[in-house]
Image (cartoon, rainbow, N blue to C red):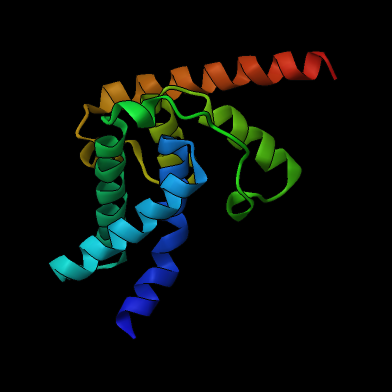
Length: 155
């Protein structure tokens, strides 16, 4: 029962992170499978829900980074945003813009706005200084704002 509960809590999170990093539906689905296989193999136990959440985010990021080291993976086109992460039309548009950001900006935007992590918590998860996280978050917001203003200008 515990594996099922953990899967229910974490599979969407793992999928979203993988989609943001890998930009490919099949690869994101593979990531979900591989991250959960790793969980099963390691038999990890968690102190609390936050520890569980941080473990899955970290393992997913590391898995995706390993996949991106492969030359073929770096040349895959983004494709359409999959049905699994589609919500309202406005959310879809925002996700499209977020997915186009460089990884360091995608990560901080995702963790801050979608996972509600603080700057301090992101610093630990991403192994970056808090000041770096703050700068990346500001830069990411500025880039998104500029893109959205451009889009709205032509509507």
